[in-house]
Image (cartoon, rainbow, N blue to C red; front, side, top):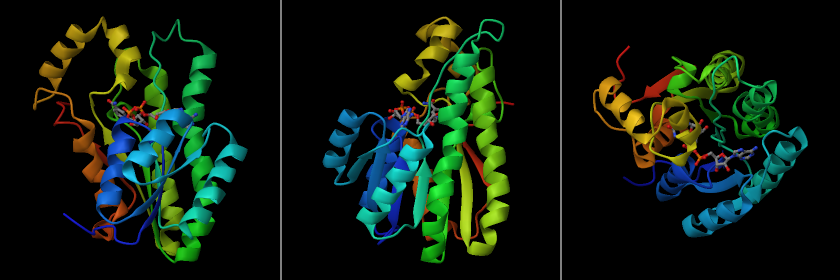
Length: 249
Ligand SMILES: NC(=O)c1ccc[n+]([C@@H]2O[C@H](COP(=O)([O-])OP(=O)(O)OC[C@H]3O[C@@H](n4cnc5c(N)ncnc54)[C@H](O)[C@@H]3O)[C@@H](O)[C@H]2O)c1
């Protein structure tokens, strides 16, 4: 593989670690220039220098922070072709015990932040004459599970947002797609694993519901980001793409 993203200018949030980091790595391997934005500036800086990307700190829950981040990133890149929104937050708990504070925290990172990113990136994508927006939802946004009501709702909103947005931006030749990973082996899921009763219970569930009988590695999710960022997907828009090892309905 090489040069599938030659010359593309890409912004990606939540890429200090795991799925986002692997996506940023593949973007660069495929010829793109990348600016990473994350709230974790230590890990974000380290990842950026390891991969050969730029880093700008952002808190995606704050509109002014996202605005400043997009402007700084576009200045570094000299324009924008692709916006990838991958920052996310996980909290789990039974619905009767769940706090409205945690509900709001999930919606601020997982849903509302996508609106902020789009609001400030789209004028730059329009200037480029075409573009791709890739948002990150989850299998939980399509089909939830116990302890995940708030997380699932916040990720489901991303899918609905992306579908409407794709309709609105199609005349500008800007495509919008949403990635819905199933179980990916990162620390991100610890709250959900705790709610399930620990690692061994989670391993049993994964064996039972995932035909491939294992979680994904971040490296196995990254190629879908590359495909949707690249011109190979030039006729693909308004899709929520599931990548979950074939989870049984
Ligand atoms: N791991 C999974 O099983 C799984 C499954 C489905 C979807 N996802 C989604 O994939 C994405 C990446 O998850 P991951 O497993 O790589 O976890 P991760 O924790 O490594 O990645 C999330 C990133 O978002 C950043 N972030 C959190 N709050 C932020 C904020 N306010 N501003 C800016 N950055 C912020 C974190 O610092 C982190 O780098 C998330 O959106 C998650 O919901 C993960």
